[in-house]
Length: 189
Image 1 (cartoon, one colour):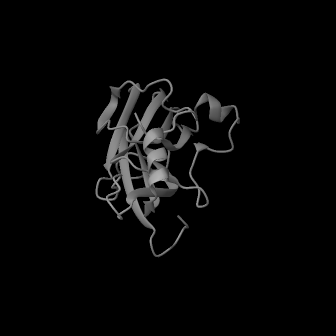
Image 2: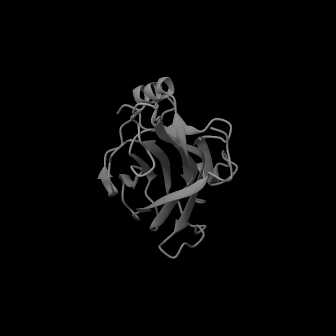
Image 3: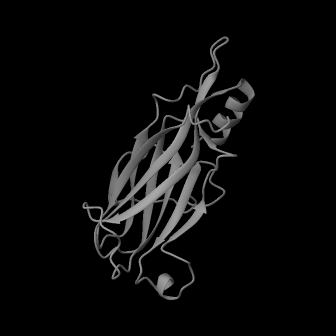
């Protein structure tokens, strides 16, 4: 499972966060072409190792920098095997435990604070982004489910439309039966 430039490739997805709308939304990324959680004979199962997740938040479809008048906040995460599909802002009631460290399906997550939000004005964070959890080159998150969803939940309504996107540094990895079984147990919805 070592990080190898020859085997690392990128996958990405994005979701649009509507202005002045509460609630959650999602964007689903199909991973079925990269994963085979069934070991057959001498053939081992295959998972997708996520080494890094790079989040970008931009204002409007033009990918502009965040306006200094933005007062909105949200939390976003990649959830393995969530199977939520593509949901518009407000169409998804995000479960209370979805963004907790106890959620074995959470691959990576971060908080966003607009420059005019109460938290940003109080200077409690060094910038607009606050990583909650992330995989690493040394300890990647290995997905053995056929999808991963970019899920977000708006805390304070966004002033304007925003695009949250994520690029995954990943590689297909072969898994021995014991590791595969353990991952399948922990990645059960």
